[in-house]
Length: 254
Image (cartoon, rainbow, N blue to C red; front, side):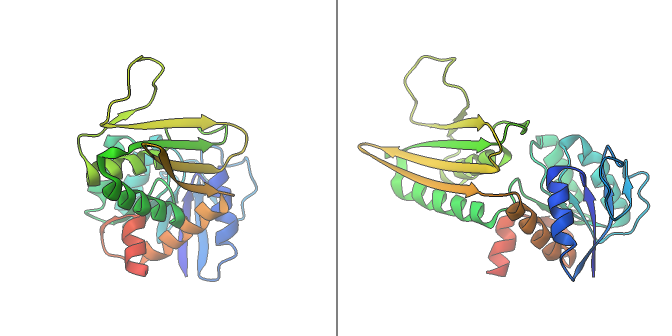
């Protein structure tokens, strides 16, 4: 039985993971951590901070906010607990902290827990390598009106992989309204839409002369992210210390 601790348990994703994990025979929820412990009636103990949570768990699943990363990492390293991070909007400092923690414990980090997004990225990399400099690249992401960070962590993950694998000289452009000039060939435009209850949608455009190619992924509910996080928790629970991603997991499991 794999014991989970859910950081951000009273958030939307925390409640999705709670519901899905409670339906799994090989998982149990040891505890949760949230800023507002009494807001929802969970069936497991809930604490305001990790400092109060003297509970043994095999994996911490984190869907809280970047401000919680230091506390989460401290707890996991201290208790030798594996960590799955699905929180978005992480800074370079946060990522370096997670990389440092991976020297002591297994750490799984992904801005998007969907398997389909990984396929989208692989297809986009192949398209970019095949199409070359004759096609401009633009990324459009759409999310619900309560999402705070923009562009999304997934959009940035896509953009960063394109930049590192295809051309490190590519520049990210987030707002074209401030500069009235022709689009430069070494740009990746990244745009965000916020509205309604859109769970998440990402499209990579390759625009060439007289033709456009679109690679698109749509999330129809948060359950898909929850299933991905639970699969990541199962995967990392038996791993040695190290830094793991959706790509490394899928490459090993396929």
